[in-house]
Image: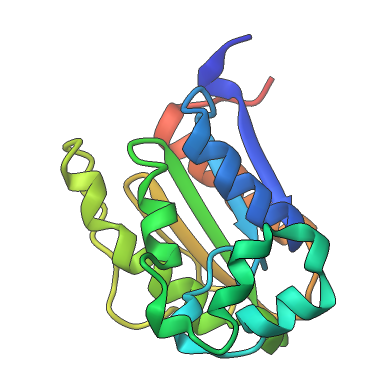
Length: 177
């Protein structure tokens, strides 16, 4: 397998998994987290949309029992999600949100990838990000990082796939086959 052509993409719960997989295995050239929300790309300390307590109650089988001690205590977390995204460096990291998906906290997802961006400079892959999130359907692609806010609901659409393909082509020079 040509590792420069392998990526991991996930939506919602799968987006959480895609981020984790990319931090654990840097053979993935690209990691894309689509509408992953709490314990995915969104900053937990914002307490917007799905919170740690809500996710632990609704999906208790997704996390270890120890995670429950952070229910309604997000400020006591030793880390937050921007640090998880930073562990993907120097590979390509993509985060996507949907404008009607408040549960996933689109602003928290943007802030997380923006706050992770300085780590890429340690690898001389500077990826300065704007301080404010883009408008819907106006993707931001900077170096090895991308973020887009798609118009619509919690879903993985053809538009999302095109954003991931576009950054892969841009960073890795992939051509149509």
